[in-house]
Amino acid sequence: MPNILFTRRSFVTAGCMAAGLGFSGSLAPARAKGLAPTPSMRGGANNYRPGAPIVDRIGNGGFLMHGTVRRAGDGMPLEGQRIQIWAHTTEGHERDLRSHGATLTDANGEFHLEMPQIVPAFGQAHGHLAYDSGAFETVYLRPVMPNSKDTTLSAHFVLQPK
Amino acid sequence: MDTKNVSPTQRILVWGVLATAIVVPLALSALSPLLAWRQPIYIAAGFAGVSAMVLMLLQPLLAGAHLPGLPPRWGRWVHRLVGGILVATIIVHVAGLWITSPPDVIDALLFRSPTPFSVWGVLAMWAIFGAAGLAAFRKSLGLSPRNWRRVHTALITVAVASSVFHAMLIEGTMEIISKFGLCVLVVGATAKTVADRRVWKN
Image 1 (cartoon, rainbow over the protein chains, first blue to last red):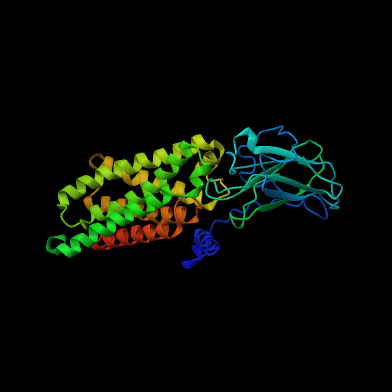
Image 2: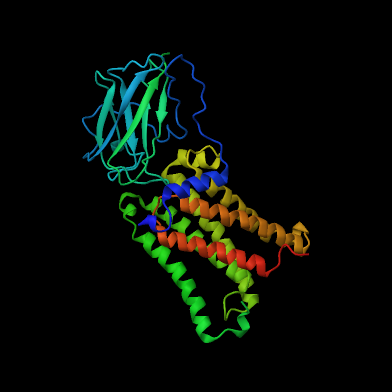
């Protein structure tokens, strides 16, 4: 339906270009040789609650958050890393405890966590992910869904050893 | 428009279009499926934002005496009244969002938000507060009427453009076509009034 007049993406692009907003947040220098660590995204830590429990799924599920965790430099997949996830979903606001959960990466450095459908809030359908277990530098991500009807969202961590 | 020589048909048309432009975006926003997943304060904050956009359509029409049947003197009085309501509506919008998610609003107000639309929203807010402050302190500012009007118009131009970017970049409760239509009308009405009042001419 929105495509009748213009696509959201084209409008966003035009708006951004018109703004000439040079913020990108991705200008952090690569500190390790080889694979550079993932910088935290702006707003990534918003409504973060430390110590979210490891769960089989958040709420009733229906939406899949997934991604990978690797080590900066050599890119080795990291097993057993705790990733915390939260979002505004059909079952609760970002600040609600029930909207928060954590999962561990498998032997391939991959994580998957079912959660309720993410719905647009504060202008965008987006999720939040955090790594803050201590062995590596803390990273907060805030990926935006390309389409708010999507039922999956991915985010990838490259962690810098402390 | 010279509102003195308006036919009854034109009068009905103008008021009909205005009523539609006010009611339809608000009604469709009230039917948004997103409301099911929002708390009352967040819903109120969103509606305050939609209402502010609707009020921004009224303002140039009142300032430019484009509403048939409304004497210009009344129009200016209503323009000041609506300006006050607009400021209050923006405060409700920001306060409601702040209560809903404080870090997101703090990021926006400090211009460090990851979302471009919040930069536009904060810019529009300050431009409207500036335009309203200029009106509230008109006498004590001591500007010539021409300069006062130029500054007021400059602030309004920033406010209108920023508000349109703000609204169009958001995926929120407003239905996309009615939102686009309202934005076109706000830009059109503002441009027409600025052109008619010859703000930039000496």
